[in-house]
Length: 180
Length: 360
Image (cartoon, rainbow over all chains, first blue to last red; front, side, top):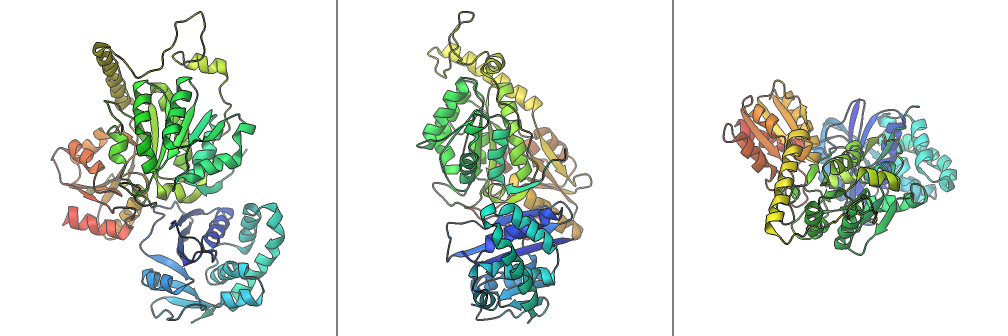
């Protein structure tokens, strides 16, 4: 198993932390992982993306030309990365803020209204976990238990009470993701 | 006990490895993309546990001179910076080399010249392996290509620095510094006691005693005859290092028709390029210099008689390629491929370059 993933959106959407949680979950599952951010001076409002690789075998390059999975959270990222999904790969996008949806027919395209759902849950911070839940529904590359274990390990103890909310968000994400 | 596997950035790994290797002092000034080194050290508060000093100096010039002072007393001291900051330090590095002192430097390279960008680059190759500062000196230069090696090379760098009384440098870049990967940290080693320092470093300025002559720590020598003797001693030392300390890794070289030469992050990207090229039936291997100085000349020379061409892969305009060409000495074509200013080439472009420049 090897999944080469790009997660891209606006800074402040939790792109990097979602990648980090995914990488930690891979670690908990005993897999090889790399997490490579396109780091820059931009923070909130700028564009942000991170390449995460989860694999059973040793990982060569943390920087890639094409991806198995693209998780796209804004229009500029869709324009940049839609063409870089491998044929037969998967593109997941949040419907919110996407004016021109993806058009490729040779990949699996999924839509998840995570921003709307997070607003409904009255917790916009759950946004990236809803997206992660959607991803794990389509590609269960790591167990949800490993995600929760990873959260417990990485979150400061004072935030541990948020873990059940995150679990709920992951489950909800799995329920609302749909094929375009 | 099974060792715990952790996930962290290369920069964090360097900081934690330094504490665990019993380093006595870190002096540095923040600069992207290596600020996590100082940040992690500050968060870890090693002065409360091992007694390690962590100090944010007022500038890079101050940092390197604090390292000079600490190294003169035989302490295990280090600094880290990124390209523009390393340039500021070069005078001090030359003094440290001239005074024959051990220390560890870390450069997490970014795009230049000047203030440049904050994205990854390997354009400080020349600065690192050809001197950097003034005078005939060399810095032992280690090029890690993983987060694990970032940690491991702290020990390796200090060990070589003390073995030869010479500065050692971990030459990394924004990819390896910012990337998170799995890592197993080394065991905690106790810092040396003052007695152990005196024993290990009889040359150090450890306080006046009646049983020995004073130790002078200086790079200044007013007599050119004496200075020439010093230089000859340095050159003999450098020859020893070149003889004993070369490190490299060979990846799929056995049956290779072509060879990629790449270090650090580019060696990782090069490995992926090999996977892609081999799927297309191109037999290509990768030779990764782990020590950039001493440069792995002998093995590259051997391959010059086996393969049809070499591609030096670097995130710069072609620096290491000059050393590869010197070694190959015209026997086979040697070309360079890279991107500049903080753009990192992706694996597909490497394969394209290999075809266009070497295979044709």
